[in-house]
Image (cartoon, rainbow, N blue to C red):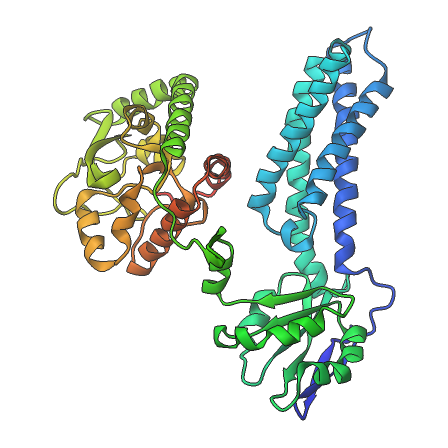
Length: 478
C-alpha cells in the first residue's frame, strides 16, 4: 500500500492520494456492522426457537415463520435505534464499554416494543416463554461478541491496508503543532492526508479559490484546528468551507470543548453557558433519593444469599467481626460510619490510615476475593437506606485522607456538596482502587466534579450499568 503524503511548499500543501481502488472505505463498516447485527438478532431468534423446541420436546410448537417475523421486528427496532444514534460509526464501535450499554438499552427497548405489540394484538400466547428466556441470554452475548470483534479488527484492518481509511485534511495556522493530533487519530480509522497552512496575507475567500479543488480530490473531511486565541478570526474560513460538499469539523481545546457541551441559556439578549451547576434541586433530590431507596431494598433482598455466604466465609477464615466500620465524611462534611465486609486483619480508623496496596499482607484470602469483586461494598446499601450515601456519587474516603487532600487539592472539598456513592463516574472510567499519587487523586476529583455538574437520573442508571462491566476488570482492585 502506498501511503498518502503531503509535500509543503510556500505555505500550501499539495496532497497526493494513495491508490486505494478496489478497497472498501472504513465508512462502509457502518453498514456492515448494521447488517451483522440484524443477521445476529434474526438468527438468534430462530436458533432459540429450534433449541428450545428440541430440548423441551415440544410437539405443538408455533410456526417458524412467526419467530422469523419476531426476529425481523426486533432487528429493525434495534438497528434503527443504533443507526439514529451513530452507534455504527467505526470510532463508536471501538468504544466497547459504551457499546455494551447501548446493547442493553436498545435491546430492552426493542423487546419492550415487541411485547407491547404482542399484548395489543393478543398474540403473546403464541410465543414460548422458554424461547424468550433463551433469547435474552444468547442474543446479547452474540452482540457483545461482535463488538469485541469490531474493536479488535477495525484498527488492525486500517493499519494493514485492508480497508481504505477515511481521509482528513487539516487546516491550521502556521506554527500549530500537529504531533499530538496525529497520535490521537492514529487508531480511529482515519488518516491525515495533508496539512494546509492559512496564509496571513490572503482572505479566506482568496485562499479557498486556490485550494478547494485540491481538498475535494484528496480528502473526505476537513478538520480545522486552532488555538483559543484564534477563534474570533476563524469565522470567515468556516463560512467558506461550508460551501464544500463534505463534513467540516473544528478541533477545540479540551477546556473550550467542555464549555460548549454545557447547557446554554440567555440573560436578556446575551447568550450564556452554565459552567457551574447548582447542587440538586428539591425535585432532583426527591428523584435521586426515591431511586436510591428502591434500588437498595431490591438489591439487599436479591443479594441476601451472597450476604450470608460472605459473612460465613469471613468468620470461618479468621477471628474478628464480619463488618468493618470506619468514619467517612458525607454531604456537607457530616461524618458517618460506613459499613463494609471486613477484608483485612486490621480495623484502622484513626489519624493515620494506609491505603490497601497490591499484595498487601493485611488483606485476608477471603478479603482479596471480595475486594476484587467488590462484594465487600454490599453492606453500604444499608448506608444508602439510612440516607448517609447514595447508590451513585463520589466515593467517600477516610476522614484522615480527606484532611490531607483538602490541603493539597483546591477543589477536593467540592466533592462533598452531594452524598457519596457506592460507585461513581470516576470508578467506571478506570479510577477505581488505590490513589498512590496526587495526580491520580486529582483525576478522580475532576471526574467527581463532572458528575456533580452533569447529574441526571439517566446518568446514574448509565453509571450503574457500566459498573457491572467495570467489575470484570480486577487489575486495580486489591
